[in-house]
Image (cartoon, rainbow, N blue to C red; front, side, top):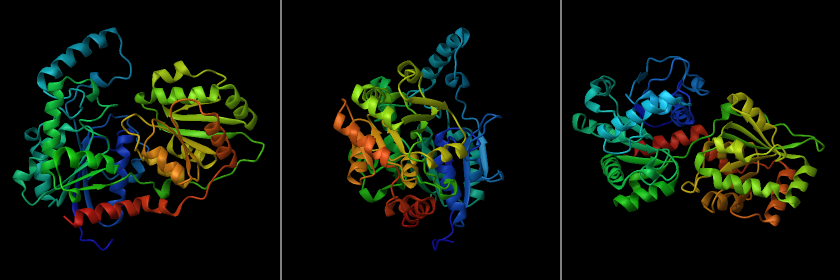
Length: 420
């Protein structure tokens, strides 16, 4: 045990193993961490497809007695990978129906969830004597429905956890394109959650500051709960010989809103002076994971850019263990992001190249001497520094990286819960 009182915790997260998607990693890891420290943990989540195979399934185990999956009722047609002609016609009809049924963001996959339709959630809380309910978003709207559980269970405490911004989201979930009246509906739900939950956590304090200022909340109600790197996932680092090529790795999902930063990256490596130096040093930029369609439109065969598609977790860790550098591409509303891969890059001793508008992440890597921030324009001096950093290779991970290890992050979560 961790010295804290035993707790019964219910995690409510849309994505959870075996359902695929990076959104399931955060609470799969904290589930693992909470269980390891002796707490009883239950999870409710969206029912996964029959063929779903999350890379983090091993973190939660095969015993599903504490997991309940159910269908949120969101139309599958809204999430197809490809649309034929008939699908497109049906999509318009389904979208029109969603707009009639829901007053807010019809792209929110939990927008049709109604607490009254799921009385078993209240039964679970009662039967398992749940102390804390943790609702993680996005999607977000069901968090406002879950708030009503307090009326039936006055002793129940609620934590609202934000992996992404809600109403002020500029790059995902469709908020940037919503009409004013729908945004106002979402803002009312956001206010309800922020004001009615006992605690609010987010992946970065900038998100907390937004909630504090917008809804005039006390600062001690909100806390930063970053993602965590997992020691169990790391493999021993290997070093390339001097004459071998050097790989600068991007892993994960390249988001649609990073196109301008990606183009700035391409302009840099295509500039004659930089290109020749990269070629001479045999530096390549390797992308592993998912990319938007514009990636292939912009990349040319002689760019020194190599796309490998999705690979399993073990393979990507092996690639990181033998790499010479790493990349982050941040959207304009997340220039403060400290993602899981950010901490993993550091733990592997990889210099981090942050391609984004100027922000806290790019400043942080430079202040800590663990990388470079590259914004608009091609600065030859900056690219020379980048090449020197990659050529020099791995760094000794800073001591503070241990604070972001899974067990330590889980203890921070438990401390916040125990104080409320």
